[in-house]
Length: 394
Image (tube, rainbow, N blue to C red):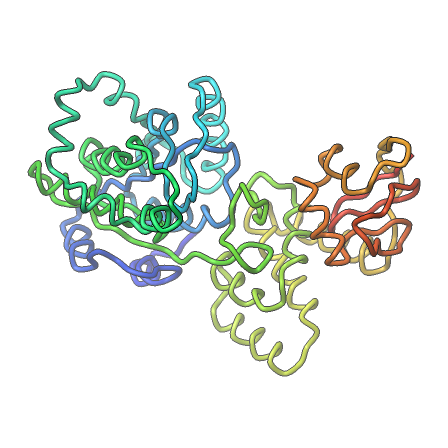
């Protein structure tokens, strides 16, 4: 997929924020050694979104040059929960839940990563942590100070808010850092929110006689609401597993201010063409026209050009011409049931608060008319929820 011409320049620049350090990476590549790229995930949800995929596409670039991605499933650390970005402790998960979702993760990443054994390997950190003796773990702890661990920004935020920090959360970065040593990681590609943990990886590798891994951080963008980053808990993301129709519709719900950002980060369209789109927007072209192009190009990346064209035509036919699809699925509402309750109960939205946000944004219609109030009682008719969901209420 990626051209060998100037691949390294692109691999070290497109969507890259910082490299710790670039000269180390270049030295390893010039040595013609096949590098090992650590890709670690805790299984907190079965979905991977396009924000996560930024790192996956970056790894794919290295795979196509013959380098290996070591996909580390944090089945042990998932039972603890990474505190990164969290204002409260993550709920614990069972082994069965973790393993079920791990299989889903593997299926999704293989939609982007090459899956042959020369360039792809799956590991689980329970391989070493389930059998680690307490004394050995305490030796790891002896090489890091409490002062260094507690300086993490999310811990400092909790301290300011007088919110509890549990010991297993403080120790989590040690576990993630030691993973890098066990896997003999040469490179890890992460969002900047994981930098603290991966720097500990460099620390332990150097301590135990390994060349420390290079850390490449990638850009993080706002989610679909234009505020917080894409998050499965906030529901403001485009999932790799979403249907072409859902991907297209979610892109069309983006704030206009994010069109160019999403184009640059989440597609591989030539930068000069994106510059043209940016200029057209500045000159007053209807943002919807560029957004349709973005939605089409994103769908094509994960499905195919043919599917993308078909999805675009269906979207224009259905939504631009205000057509209501035939043979709508029917859903029964309770007598005098508030609309927000109905939407949450039937899983058409993630929560009542999500329903209220959609109503406030004019994204819910009954028989072609926008719902104006979140106090509305559910009535029979053709209900549109967001850009892509249609049902018939009975």
